[in-house]
Amino acid sequence: MTDARTAASEDIDYVRRLAESGAHAPLLGGRFMAWWGMLLSIAYVLQHLAQTGAIGDGSSIYAFIWIGFGVLGIGGQMFLARSMPSKAGAGSAGNLASRTVWTAAGGAIASMVAGSIALASQGFGPASFDWIVPVAFAVYSCALVVTGSLARSGITRIAGVGAILMVGLYTAMILSPDRYLLAAAGVFVTVFLPGVLLLKSEPRG
Image (cartoon, rainbow, N blue to C red; front, side, top):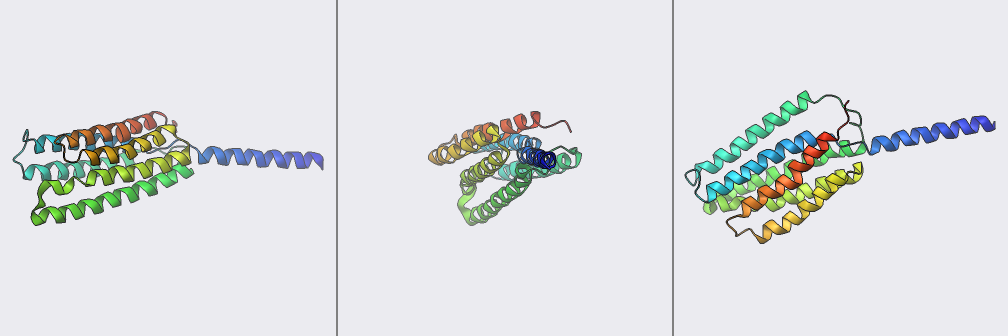
């Protein structure tokens, strides 16, 4: 009887360790973060150049930048999703939450973009889009901190704290002509670089 109880206890401990290992499996969204982070950093730099008159005609250039960003971003997202091999830990709490929370984040940003377009159409011009940036960093911070906490990913949690700081920094500089350079640097540090590091730490299969 004692041996049976011992074996049962060992089996339970083994199952518990497996469950804990799955719950804190490495995050698998690094390639998507790196892709969007790279594109957004470039788009913000182009936005800065357009606003300072270095490129474009002062009007249609903004549509070119952001339509191009959307097309490339969605196209790349679809390609990466289809080409991504099956990975161990895909069913962990962190990875399941990551898909949901980033989808919600993207929806919130898209809603802000739609509202800004409506505002710009009333004659407020490109400045209508400036407030998208702190909203975006706010939702990044939520997504990064939540998924990082569930997966016990220090990289992701630190990136989330950086995104929180960017909300205040950008808001304080929203009247500065260099605000989009700050936004580009913020996205590079809090989205692109963490995405690259997460991609490197993914399991082989």
